[in-house]
Amino acid sequence: MSFRGSATAGALAIVLLTGGCAAVPERAAPAPVTVTPGPDREVVATPAAHTRPGAEPAVVATGLDAPWSVVPLPDGTQLVSERDTAAVAEIRADGSVREVGRIPGVVPGGEGGLHGLAVREQDEQTWLYAYHGAETENRVVRMPLTGDAGSRGLGAPEMVLDGIPRASTHNGGRIAFGPDGFLYVTTGDAGLRDAAQDPASLAGKILRLTPEGEAAPGNPFDSRVYSLGHRNVQGIAWTADGQTWASEFGQNTYDEVNRIVAGGNYGWPVHEGVAGDAAYVDPILAWEPSEASPSGLAAAGSTVFVAGLRGERVWMLDIADDALAGNPVALWTGEYGRMRDAVVAGDDLWLLTNNTDGRGSPVDGDDRLLRVPLTQAEG
Image 1 (tube, one colour):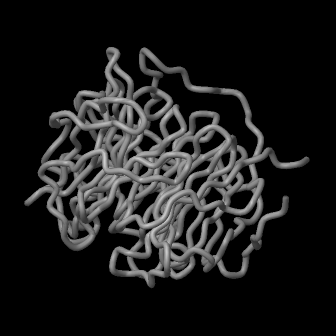
Image 2: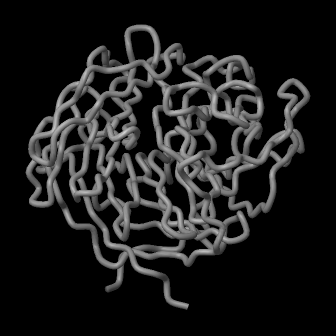
């Protein structure tokens, strides 16, 4: 089945192909390191094919309230966070929606509230991780996820990490377990521009943690910090070769997709977009914010899907040799409004719209969870 998309070279501000990363400035002294897999995971090192939508998106659920993150579960249900209500919703295959529980301590306001979710099985317990705004900071907590589909609940929260700077904007908030078994946390600069360049600050970073919240072994700064120089990362995922990719809001000029390496400095606030400065890592792709405002990012095989808010589309990027291969393709432009999250599970791409957060123009049924089957690209 065909899908609606367009290869849009002219509309892109910059397309940059790069196979490596630049050196880290002296103040961020450690050089990039090789990350070894955790004890329970192995990084896949075999090449993978590019993927394509196999059909138009199907609406699975409607009536969600400012949804922010979706996590598919092995039994076919999905968990969705709602930013302003602090609720975690369970969505079943028939589209029914029930509230699993509300995260204690969430304080919504501005762009803050309940953000990213992640799930991990550990010691015969299923844990739900959540990134959220509290009164004066952002936090990561985890809670036991109890029961089965249709009767799930949340246990008492445990602190994983606190002290992440919070503001009305630039709160980051995406969390995901990588193929190495560690928890990756994306933070914004919270308006503290220079803090993004400070390895001692949690602002403007990608963090890499053990499931309990400590610095993961092998981190480049002997701390929780994995990479720095970020303004507001809102998407992170891994292609089949284990390479990390992230989407990032720029300020007024360029949004970015970055190839993330341990110890990499991505330039904010010194640079926005492609700078050609050997002291910093350039993005593989930069857009004007009106074309993207990228939020969630998903990967299937060697293809990356990026959800666009202002751009009201999903960008499809093929990757080869750690760089962009060919022109990005815009999917479903303007058909579903603002797109907040994109997640791949098995052979499906899951998408969340985000029209009820105060910045969109909701229509009947908003906000929605969408499902797109994926197929291997021909040729």
